[in-house]
Length: 101
Image (cartoon, rainbow, N blue to C red; front, side):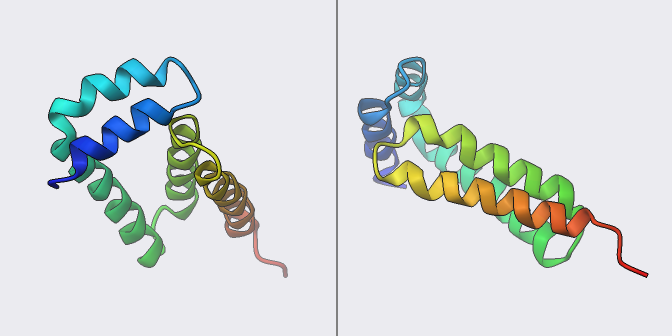
């Protein structure tokens, strides 16, 4: 939590999508709450996936999350999110297929 403001500052400085810069800078004073909210969101996603509840919707939320972070992350960090988004889509499609008879 002590480094949360530095982390948001770094994201704001390295974002390659200009509209993200002022938003991230505006969030700096609330950095601990932002980081805790992000951790809570990720914990909720993990909970639903581990319990195998609402899998399709949860994977869509996870996919939106990683895609939304891409513009805030510099090269090469955003590439992991791009791969994750594709993996979430592949898993989601497999999870929503009806079982073969």
